[in-house]
Length: 170
Length: 98
Image (cartoon, rainbow over all chains, first blue to last red; front, side, top):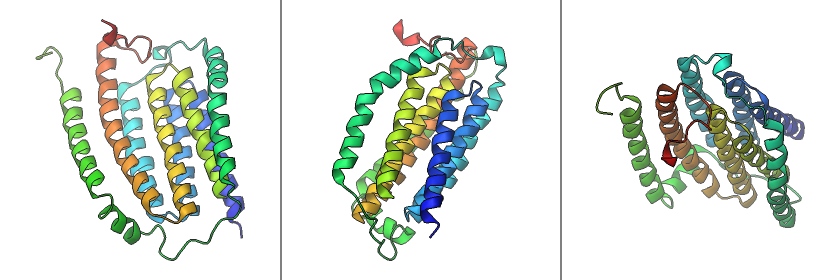
């Protein structure tokens, strides 16, 4: 029965990582901090009995996307004086927090009005690859195909954008 | 537990919006957008658990695919902008203003 304890520890880790993302000046530190958030979120998915999404989160987000971001940050070789001047950070933070508070309160009110009290027991097989696959390839077939086209477009676009040579047809 | 997961998803989303508003480093802005996507994903997973339906999981997977596509394109654009301007400041990137 250590599940609630684990849940709160992972939640705290996720929040700390997200705050670190906002606070660290160098993008490398911010990216490492964000990786902590992603891995903690994977653990939370596991606790919410979403086993497939847990694995995909670790492989795609914490693995592929984060290593791509880290690779690009290292590729650009960012020195401390390349970093933008962020002198007005606290003013923006205060303004943003003030602007965001109504939205956050509205969302919290919405969650409260759901009045979720107890966690129902997950049915057997919930969140496994078979259950998700059946829904994905019956009810969500069209979005799935559209996403495949989107990935192809993104692939071609990334190659065209990043593969441009200096002084070429630009 | 589900209620607290939903609170956490709201908190992560709001932190992501704050990151986009406050930071001027283009990498951090990009990662803050990813943070917003993750907050929404946690909401999908929590609601799927609440309603015992798999649709939330499928949506979360689709969001991850979109995030991967976005990462590939956004990083290509960042490389181009860095080559062009030599800076990472979002205020310098004003090409569309003409």
